[in-house]
Amino acid sequence: LERAEELKLVAAQADSAAPSEVDDWVEDFDEEDTGAWQAELEELQAKRDARANATVLTEAEAREEAKQAHYSRLYKLPRLIDETLSTWIDPAEDLSDKQIFQELLRLMGLPD
Image (cartoon, rainbow, N blue to C red; front, side, top):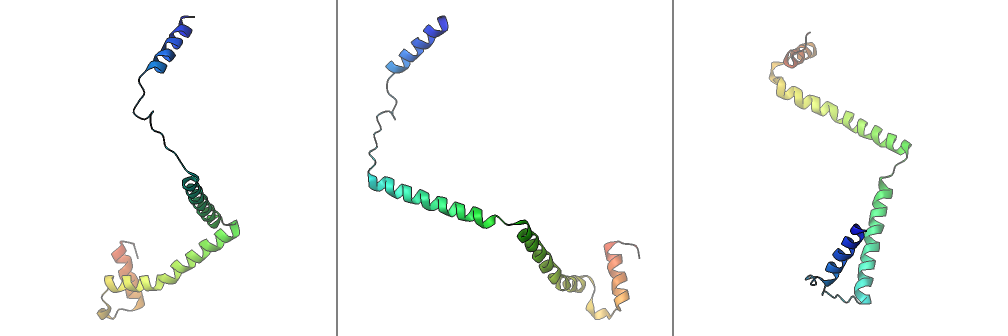
């Protein structure tokens, strides 16, 4: 019973408390404002839904995309190897393929 009386007292004090500075804010929204906000919200939701639908791939599409990415990396490999070889081994040395391979192994710290 004491707790109930205490809660009633707190509620009465809250009702009699001075209004805060935001209590007297009155904002009149006209239909034009709310209509514009609603249209903007619907546009943003449509964009969000389109983005979500665009990223959903079937398993087969995801596999195909991963395969294409893998092949594109492989396609770049000869150029990358050539750039690597030209920076590691002086092309003016006229080394044979076997000598280049052994030099690469040596530079990478791998046994022959």
